[in-house]
Amino acid sequence: MELDLNVDIGEGFPFDQQLLQWVSSASIACGGHAGSKAIMERTVEACLARGVRIGAHPGYPDPDNFGRKALAMEPELLLDNLCEQLARLDAICRQRDAELAYVKPHGALYNQAVNDRALATLICQAIKSVVPHAALMGLAGSPMLSLATEVELAVIREGFLDRRYLHGGALVPRSDPNALLEGTDAVRDQLTGLALEQRVVGQDGSEHSIQVDSLCLHGDSPNALERARFVHNHLTELGFSLPQY
Image (cartoon, rainbow, N blue to C red; front, side, top):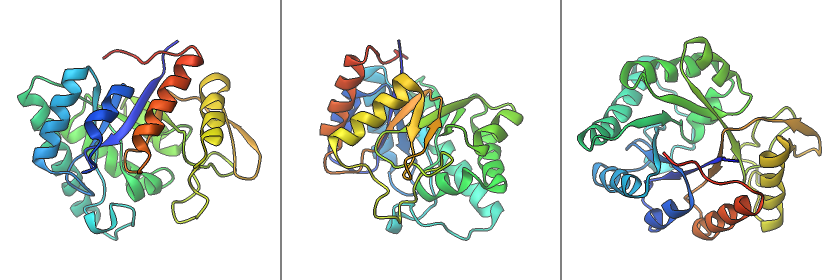
């Protein structure tokens, strides 16, 4: 059995290169919430060296808040900015004969677009304008992915190992102090449920069916490297291997 493991990366943290040894996909910041041309170049080259699938991780152009605060931008301006972010990373990939395989929105942009049809439409427009071959990676079971399918984009259904879920399968907002799963046992239980049983337990104790193609690791926490190693090893114990791209 294979299951993709993706990490948000290229955000300026010192252990990026080491994280790549434990994952099969990398969602690379494109200079919106974080990242720079030099970081993108280094990260793409490291992905190619390890056979890691390359994805774009565009966010609101707000590095001061790390893209985790929703911005009230005019739709045209946001669309232009997202296209610029995708074009930046795509150009770096093309220069190295690499493919930008998917797009995963970041932070507040991701969380809003999950249920905001207008914003999800805008993200799909950016993808189709710049990298129409790329898939949209988003929250499994969300309206955002249904919309992407409607406009004939490939989709990658994503599950989270270290985020709590609400009743109905949405994520607990980052503003909630209980949004993150911190303990090893809690992460192990959620990983096992997602990988083997295709289910997740919500914050209120309710169970939800959820089919995932990829599991997310966040690369911006102090224990990111330790967590990545633990998750990779536990997936192996469960009988899964990472796909080769």
